Length: 121
Image 1 (tube, rainbow, N blue to C red):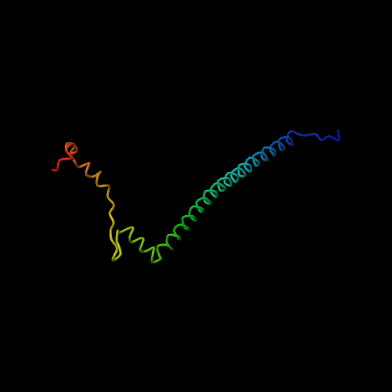
Image 2: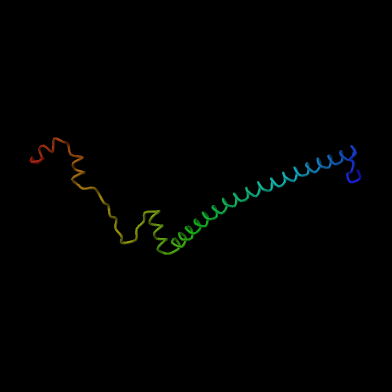
C-alpha cells in the first residue's frame, strides 16, 4: 500500500477544516463582488438620469440665452416694456375693437320694442 497514502483522522480533520475555511472565504469574496456589481448598476442608472438632466438644462440654457439676446436689444426692451406695462410711444393711438352694434342693442332692447319697431319712440 505504498502507492496509496493512508489518511489519519487528524489529516482528514485538517483537510475538512481547510475546505471549510476556503468555503467561508469564497462566500465573503462573493458578497464583495455582488456589492460591487450592484453599485456599478446603480451608478449606471444615476449616470443616465444625470445625462438626461444635463440635456434638459442645456436646452433651457439655450432658450434663456436666446431670450437674453432678444431682451438686450433695443427692440426687445421696447417689446418687454409694452408687454408688461401697457405703454405706448408718443403719437401712437389706442384702438378698441367692440362687438357689432346690432348685437349690443338687441340685448339691451326690451322684446315689446321689437314689435313696434315701425313706431318712433
